[in-house]
Length: 185
Image 1 (cartoon, rainbow, N blue to C red):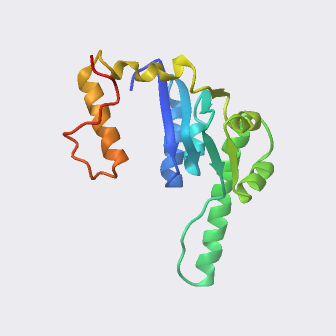
Image 2: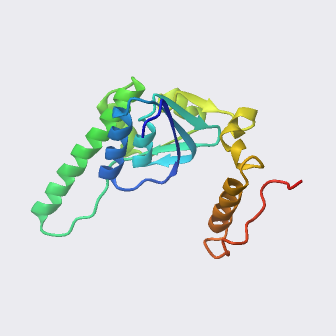
């Protein structure tokens, strides 16, 4: 990707810690100005991906959730102890990202918040340093990224409508029958 600016829009409950850390590192290495937007939720490792932004924007109704790394282990007690040690090391890595990117607190203080599984709603994320600003969805510019999906580019609008229809009906709706989100003149 060769761009001067990259916007990453997040609404994720998380996933694989190693894949998320790779995404975070890839975004941090990219020379573009990165803006991460938490549109809904950035939970678990998605909250770390949100930290990759030079500018980190949380929607007024958006949330970030942080918690300790978790995993599954089977085997004898030595395997369980090894897994516990690994999870602690990974949690320290994640806490270090929060401490570095927010410029507040220590790894230990972030670990305490992670142990408590802490949720930051909207401007609380800004207050904690996890976001650099809160967005107002009522502002006209909030819809600007979606403006090109209306009448200017009908194919894009139709594809967007098919995607929304598919997601809103749990994939049970025929994608060839779009739900019209924009009034037709």
